[in-house]
Length: 312
Image (cartoon, rainbow, N blue to C red; front, side, top):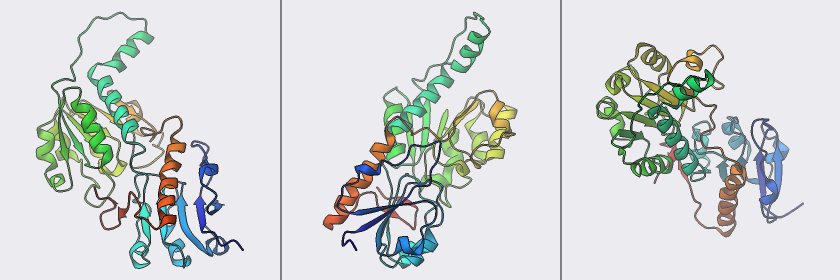
């Protein structure tokens, strides 16, 4: 039997996503690829668990069955599905892939906001009809935006928005209790926060009403941060002007959701951070941390299970 550390990789095939490039993991460890929940034999002797499958949610029973498991790494930024009491009780470290998606998601947000301000959906609709209709559009410069979430993604969004002369406010954990007041002072409300008890249902009817009829909502964090029924009603009644949504309460978004066909709404299938080659960069974060773990060094991107994210 090999004396090298054993790394389990949960990588259930997903036709929509690239497979993990496991060949990039150095040969210092034994890599065991797992489909679904690991068996007892697979867990025997395993010290590291790499959760590539974003649909995997059964971490608690795995931790209870794996005596030697001390580190779990998520191939994602959001880890709410993996948070469980066993992480603390069994002294297992959880890390995530923070940093991989910062710039791509910020670019997506900029594209969505600029498309809305410059009226691109209307322009494309007129183009399809071969209709020449002169009109004026808005300006992004001088707009005010609030970014909910002060992690690396939220900071990347705020940085790039500010470079286009947008007045940006970063909203952290403490300020989230005053979301109505925050929304009343901005034109664009961007959710880029992890899903926690504090952020669930954070953007509701009162917040949307405060944002006002010219307001635009962007959600690239987690679907339940926005009360979807309240958002649909706000869009239907003109309480706000539009929304760009990459995440939803239920995914895939049901075919009968009114969001699919509402004017001023962009529906994106949870892909704002994914770019050609992201799987290589993603596994690079794990490989870097694996080297640290083998050398007995401090890991990067350690998640605090009490709050559900990496404390900056």
